Length: 141
Image (cartoon, rainbow, N blue to C red; front, side):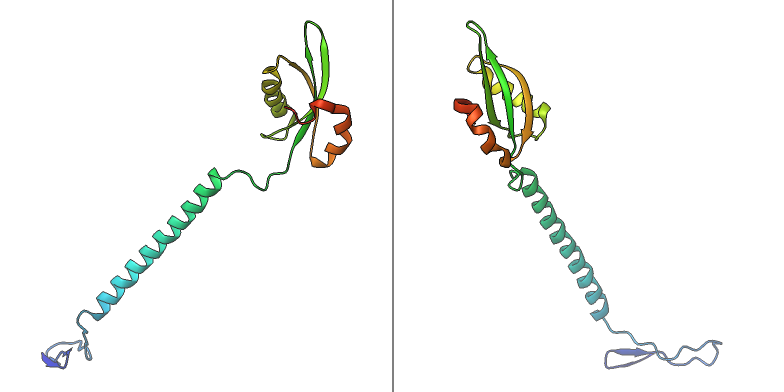
């Protein structure tokens, strides 16, 4: 074999049936380049996964800023002597009647009231028409 400036060249052997042309070998450059690309690909994949996981974590623990306001109107009573009241309360959980019932029941019971019924759930557009009817119990609980 003859060696010329970083390139190995095989000499032709007349006894072999198949004779390769010239085989060139560049020491180290190709292997190093492939390893750098593989490492770069792994690093960029890890960076993307880290970014995605950070965004997912922030979204999971962030309060629902885009959530629509939800309100419920309800009726409650107090015994000895019997008192009834109609009120409007903000619902912080899911905007459903069943969620509003459990949430409002807890709030009004602190002052000795018993929740009778949640009449409806609505958004902020329904507040003005109910304000006068609710009186002192408008957004109290």
